[in-house]
Amino acid sequence: MRIAILVFALAITATSASAQTPPPAPAPASASNPAYAPDVASMDAIVAALYASISGDAGVARDWDRFRHLFHPSARLMPTGTDAQGQSNLRPLTPQDYVDRAGPSLVRDGFHEQEIARRTDRYGRIAHLFSTYEARRAATDARPFMRGINSIQLFDDGTRWWIVSVYWQAETPDLPLPADYLPETE
Image (cartoon, rainbow, N blue to C red):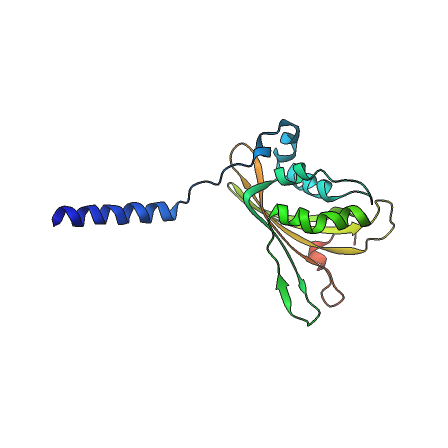
């Protein structure tokens, strides 16, 4: 009886310990692509690559392999907004969901998103960035058609940076961008 209790207690302890530390997610196949290594070498590089990989003129294909390479295997992209009934919503997407849903319209209509300001907090291997953006259909457009804030969470695994999540909200007339999140010249 004592042995059975001891075995049961050890099994519970082992299960509890493994539940606290989940196994690491496997790295995506693109993680070893040397062509994309500069994109994940620093926080600045990965954010620049994020914006560059979704941006381009109408009719120009995007490099979706580059885009997917930026994201941790468990990553999510989460647009927020308000639906036609006035209800706030959040739609979690995998990077591939984003490619499938947004990719065709980005290529059809043209889309250039650029960072205009950033606030960064970092502790050890984790970082949180509030990246204020402007979007234009063509890079030469005088005025953006949209602005907002991307909340970007990053992870440094010791060899490279990963995007863990991008959570964003576009500016609206009822919700203008706060001055603290705009370039100092505005």
